[in-house]
Length: 590
Image: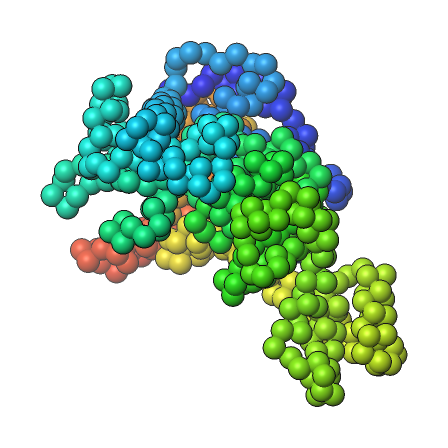
């Protein structure tokens, strides 16, 4: 059963979509609408549009779309009911205690409870005599007891069922433990503790909920089966959208955040007073993590390992951070050490000096461009200056380009005119390539409606008519009376449009307003985006009633053609008669 319409309307009224989205996206007015860079995929040209009149949004690049509930769900990784609850809480609206299905929310709450109890179990084991092996290891790594407690670190016993038995004693079912991914399941169907004899790092989200675990094997344990075992994605956790340490860093990183590679790096830096460090979780830095950090900070300092994998990670991170509005700096740690090693050996003050000496993104790229080149030879210097010109050409700020051109010319004795000409030449080339790519993306966007409604290929003509009919009804629900008797839902050619049409019909006939939120519990997020693209399109035109009539005729004709062509029992004569009946109805004005 749906949440009462008046409650939904009140929540939406108190959470204006422009204000809500502006907390996450820098929006600029374009006519009656607003545009900005999409927070759900990386882009350089704004394709994310907010429509205040219909209280909706749509991205022409990735196809994301919906209302304020949809946006909140996507940006905060919440389902529909959770989004409604969050926005209700923010705006002081009291939700009814019953009357809608909250089974998914109840499952998530159970997983949160299991994770919290699991974290307590691991921490208790760490602090017990049986966990001395793990505690000695952490203390030996330089962590204090207060830091260990602050991060809730723990130890998994060398057992196949200790955690299962503990959680059973707390009233949890083994199936829910399995869903939470704290237990595994053998091929024979028996359950077992997923984490065994490992140092345990609970992963806590921005709201303070334990959402996952990372288990580190003890050094030299050849039987452990891998250095790390991490929670797989669950209903409450997606590793590409979370960061280790974000629960503490979010309150301390308004000016700067340090992105490091591992959990121990984060913990060591926090212990030393740098409580604005975070790390990815067993995956490369992602666009979702970029969007998360952009909500809390102005500057990101990349401090990843100095090995080949670390340098590759820095390159990927700088690419993701382009055009985010965040200032990007890079720290190269001496002697190939990681942050944990460096701070233990040299102390917080030396680390602070290292941090203050962070170079800009362009300086780092110029430094890396010289890697493997003999700068003592004329040929080597020429190769380096060509590579450096390519780096400088990517920067859009004319003063920045001028500064670095000047530095290189002075250092390597090259003509300023020559290097400037080379940079300008590369910029013109890059501009043409970028322009070509942007035009290509406009003509052939990353997202196509065929992806959402693959049945379109079966009958493009009928699908186009269905989409126009839906667009007209979304914009003019009062026209429904002209449609309901002439077009039963089963005559719709594609399944997706049939479902949308059925929801529209049921909503209007029940007397409810035809709002996007009506569809939120019944359609997938991508389908909601498809619907919003239709709602805000100009398919209806000025003569909506005439357009509607034409759409009905096309759909009915295509239904006859497709059904007869699909049937082996229908004769050509039956098909012709059906079309003739359609034609005679048109003449009569039906």
